[in-house]
Length: 205
Image 1 (cartoon, rainbow, N blue to C red):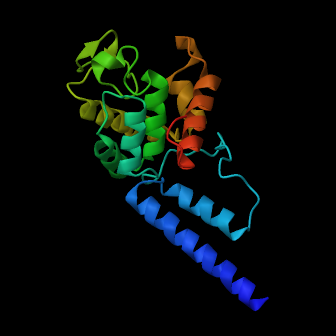
Image 2 (image 1 turned 135 degrees about the vertical axis):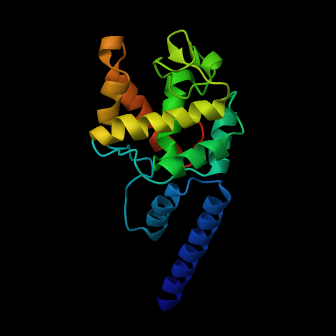
């Protein structure tokens, strides 16, 4: 019995080591390591794909996706911003806004820059035109995708967080209100679905 227990413990240690290495190398998002560890130890029967709760889905925090994983996602969606994972990660780290949410907004707004006005404006989140900005079709326009990424993080950090709008459920009704013909509930669901998917290590939503 003791020998069997020792073998089980050894197996768990090996599994955790392999998962830790994969997360470090970017083959898994770092947040999936904790979920996998719980599963390997048998201490929980929950699926790693447990949906994100919309009422507690705070966008605040350090990056939960690695540079390598972000690049894999951008490449999988044939994004014109492919290869800029390090830029998204850096902005996430600098502004304290989890990169997984920025990527989810990017997916919903323009399928990672492939659709709509974003293909011209290089915008992560199709931000409405305001005084002092170069604009196209009523939206802010940027010379590069990197500039578009940065402005989204700045906007959320300076215009939303100070007003205590820091969860997906509180941001979307202001960011994409139904008054502008948006389906707020569908938008929230799409963002949370993408976040949940990527945090399990799957690339395509």
